Image (cartoon, rainbow, N blue to C red):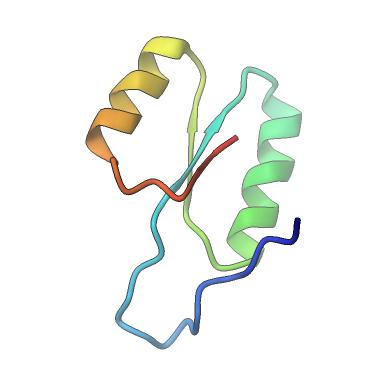
Length: 65
């Protein structure tokens, strides 16, 4: 499966967030940097409670990693 970047950076459409559930700092930075390069705005969470809160606040999340 290949991740497709948002349509165009100039558009007014904002891509849905991608939630990254990760406790490893170095691996999380790699994932977040890759997603930013592709035009997404990742939100990193470090606990199950934080993930539940993030999902409640962003029901339109495109992906949870």
